Amino acid sequence: MMEAVTVQSLTYQYRPGGPFVLKGIDFQVPQGEFVVMTGLSGCGKSTLCFCLSGAIHHNRDGVMAGEITVNGKNIREMRPAGRALEVGMVFQNPDTQLFSQTVEDEIAFAPENLCLPPERIRERVESVIALLGIAALREASPYQLSGGEKHLVALAAVLALDPPVLILDEVLSQLDSAGKKKVAAVLRKLHGIGKTIIAVEHNLESVAFADRLMVMENGSLIRFDRTETILADRDFMDAGRLLYDHKIFNGVS
Amino acid sequence: MKLDPRTKMVMAICLSSLALLYDTPDRLLLLLAATVALLLLFRFNPGAVWGYLKPFLSLMLFLFVIQSIFSPGGAVLLAAGPVPLVTSQGLSTGASVVLRIMVVTASAMLFTTFSSRDFILGLVQWKVPYELAFMVAIAIRFLPVFRDEMINVVTAVQLRGVELKKVPWGKKTAMYRRLFFPIVFGAMLKAQQLAVAMEARGFRAYPRRTYLRRLDLRRADYMSMLLFLSATLTLMGADVMVK
Image (cartoon, rainbow over all chains, first blue to last red; front, side, top):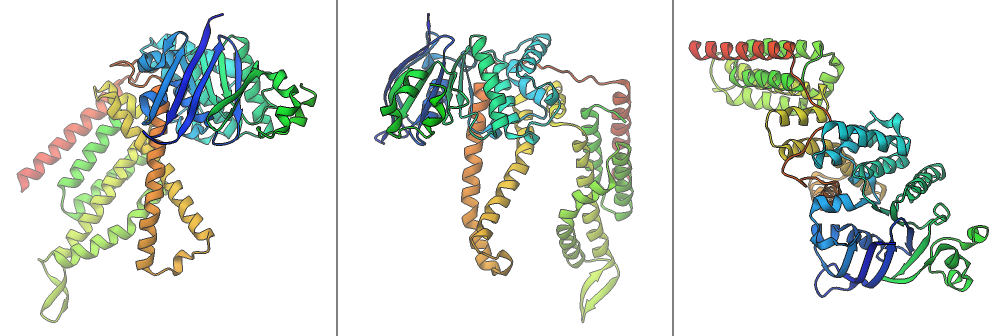
């Protein structure tokens, strides 16, 4: 199976000569895999997400070394339109990525930017609304939605581009248990239709169906293995390198 | 009445232009009445008109007093010895300034009778660059966000035991100066995140873009625009002739 995401010797500093936020990260994610990235706060998860989406190289200052390829294409060499079609990212805070008057407009924004004809924009909007089950929110203002609904709309807005790779930065963290279940069900659905998903998450209970877990610590990738293997590793779990209570997973693992 | 946003923009521009041109209270009062009547025609709540004007009341009062004092001419109504304080001309100028602000503010309310989406679409269909129209709409969208942020910061200060009402003006100004930086920094951070989110969704990926919807000017729009433009030009011409 072809690799969807390949990261080689990735390092990142916010400024030249500054401390390394990411320290020589290497991994590969095959197409269609669901990976959950976890680790204590400040370990570099969000920074890695920004690197994977190409936002670090193209929109932010700092020194990024190493290579990232998405579906065989180097992220540094991709034009904005190309990147948007290959990798979609949903940020931790949905308020900074929703700016349209209605949910429908929010979803239509990306296909409009890609110069699709109106009838194809309509098709994309309808299919994403149906996939996420948000028809009732169609005419609602994105700013007046609940946290969970905002995350769903942000996800819908990204899915309208139909990117094969999705990077999700803590989309479940601010949700109540009902919201978590709803978004997790959507993620399961997306995984089912073959999307490659890399999701940052602390609360592993909602995403225990992930294929693999990626554990980060102080800017390094310390473990990348099958979810059940890591959860069954009592020594690793007892070392307190993750935020959650592993006892929850006794049944799962 | 359902009209295209562009028609309402033309109406607002016509009313504001006349307000800037007119300098007598009687004509400005008539213009204000026409503007309010138009707002009512668009089912604008009169209470909301008052709500929009309310924040400007202190400014209007201040301008009225200043203009009344510093615009000499006409009959002296109030004097401090030989120095005339309030004149009939001063009162007329003061009232004109206040009425002008009211007309411009009220006509700007026409913009609130349509969505920012239609505002952008309307401008783009008038060949205004999309980026420019989008920038204006985003600025309007984020104004309440920054207001909320300001309120949050001020609340945070009050929760630390500072009673703002009891703080003297000098200290209050210094405090607001210090609060200004976290608010501006927060705004810049938000703008940066917004830019990243927009680019991730293909913003400006191509020199042009397509649209899900399209606005169409109808007969009523053309008629209304023609009526407003011709009336405005006639009134302007008449004003110039009289002067």
